[in-house]
Length: 231
Image (spheres, rainbow, N blue to C red):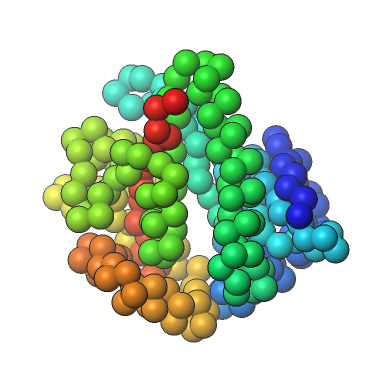
């Protein structure tokens, strides 16, 4: 297995990579083209995992950014699109190996940045899958919203600022700051992927999306923020 990374958006003009990613994620989406276009535009770094035959097996995209909250410029990383081949996901041991090496490469970069600068990064992103939320619980701390849907005053302020960054103007002043309605209408999971998500929810007793009214079929997403443990 080979792990490599491409920085500074240099991957955006790589048509072979575009085709490989589309082929990789096709089983999980009705049409993955819109999300690929959106994430290629936003993200500046991509981590790639290739198998022994040099075929793309998994990828993870991020964007290193700055967010201003109450006059303070916070160093942030957008945790973007991730995907893996059906064969990698089919075997838990195989997928765990990909997961540890692919995300481990990114985590090493993030930890190195924090050690060199003496500052903590704020990580953020959106999700509509319980597996994504559980993955965050394994590697990060100070995750908001919490599993019961609650959040801190600071988290709410950051969430509102992120909404403004995304061009979202909430008309409901009392709405949950981490719930984004109809922001991904052009991104639909396949029936097979939805069945997999529902199975995970049942198995884990995960009800957060249901409780907050996050409906994937309506294009809803859950916004999240988190940080690395102190090191």
